[in-house]
Length: 145
Image (cartoon, rainbow, N blue to C red):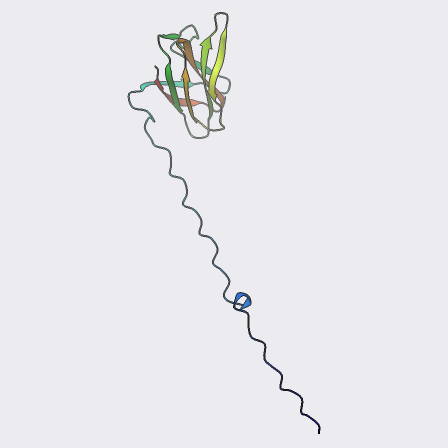
C-alpha cells in the first residue's frame, strides 16, 4: 500500500523573532540650563573693568600689578569672571612664594565666563584677568577666606 505523504507542518513563529514595528529612538535629553546672570556666590565683592584688547591684563587688587591681599587663615578662594560674548578671558589666582608670584589655580576656557574655586592656606594672593581674544567690560566676583 502506498502511503500518502505527510502533510507539511507550518512553522510556529518564535515570539523572540517575530518582526514588529521599529523601536522608537531614545528621546533627546533636555539642554543644559543657561548659567545664572548673577554671581555664583553670596557675599562676593564685585569689581568691574574693561580690557582694551588681546593681551591686556588686570590684577586685583591694584590694576598696575603692585597689589596683593594677605589672608590670615586657610579657606576657600572663589573667583567668578563674566565677560562679553565672543571674548576669551582667563582667570588666575596667584600666590607669593617669597620670591615671585606663582599660579595656584586658574580657569582658562575658551569663553568669557571663568570660575576658580580652591581651598588654600593662609598667605599672600592676587587675582589676574587676561584677555586672549577680543576685549570689553567684565565683572569679577571674589570671595576670600
